[in-house]
Amino acid sequence: MDLLRTKLVFFGTPAFAAATLETLVSAGYAVAAAVTAPDRPVGRSSVPVAPPVKLTAIRLGIPVLQPGKLSTLPDLVRSQEPLLGVLFAYGRILPPRVLEMFPRGILNIHPSLLPRYRGPAPVAWAVMDGATATGVTVIVLDDQMDHGPILGQRQVAILPAETAEQLTIRLAEVGTTLLLSLLPRYLSGSLRALPQTDAGASVTRELRRDDGAIVWERSARELYNQYRACNPWPGFYTWFDDRRLKLLDVEVHDAILPAKTPGTLEAADGKITVATVSGALVIGRVQLEGGVPLAASAWLRGHPDAQGTLLRSLRQPIPTRSPADG
Image (spheres, rainbow, N blue to C red):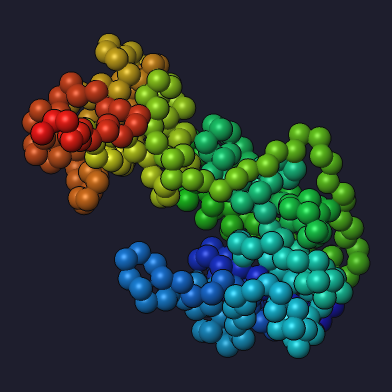
């Protein structure tokens, strides 16, 4: 098989997908184009920022396609005459017209052991659930979400303190290695994809901002999993008076028995300890809404009355005066 004649189109957006694109090129595959999301403003700036896959493609001399509407994608891709597509974290569902344009289909790296954790946030929800293992799956895309036949899988242990962001990066590396091991056999016709079964299937959704909100009437272990899953977005936060307080550098202590109401803040040795219904969380840094991250010791010096405060799961309503108050 001549890799240089295997023209493929790569679909992806974030930095870990850009690393996969670069690995494919280094392995000798001829990437005819990279399809990625449009440039978008990041943070408070109104200046559009290019996605990492675009920047990597430009550096490698690969044409970049950034369709605003997916209905225009078939015309953009057709001119490349690709044999195969490779998709990793593109962020959009491809219409059937695009799938039909690739004689050997589109291969997708999915960061879970399908059919478990189908959908857009498999890593975060595996961590949120307290799973001890997950994996990667390479499938041939069909017209249903994460439903296509499986070419190969690899299981990966989830480390006890690993955040969703850290695990995503590690799974991306494993998934890229798996893809490269499968591609030659798939293109030669010696590797057949096996249909997925729906037995044990589960579907995830995107994380929402309120998924990071702490409900202190849960165990320390459950909350620690939530902290890991919501790192870096939407963050792990509670309410201090009427302001959002993000908790950073969190550790779990299952053996600490709560002596007070769940959510009670206590200060000791420059750190913050918060009681839960079972065990406690120890906080190394915090960030109060509108402020910058601070070591717990520094924040406590600025809030000497925080000791014994009951942190809340919901924002406290700000009292308002009615017209009858005069």
